[in-house]
Image (cartoon, rainbow, N blue to C red):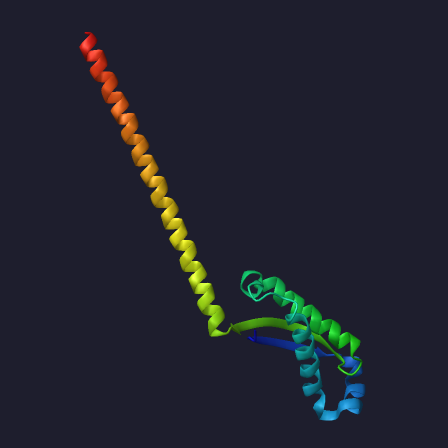
Length: 144
């Protein structure tokens, strides 16, 4: 299943390595940094279940941020550190969205059915108790 993640990040160039960065990559450094970040995110994204992106969004965000940071450290040519990282929207296939909606509707239907069963049980139980009290009153009235 293919889905799209909008991830935004900012990075800081290591001031002491700017000369080396310019020597190695000149003005093309930005594309190399972005490439390495995307590569790290793609490698990490495959090991995460789609549902987790919605249930554990903040921890996924941290995982992606750490992955990008470590990938940059492993790559000697980036000469930067991660400043901020944020996951924006997650675009899922329509089939997944439909399945999620059906699942939510089924859960609501199940909850409603459970509520109705409990209400019916309570009503029947109350009716039996009420009848029992009524019969007991009649019994005591006849004994007087």
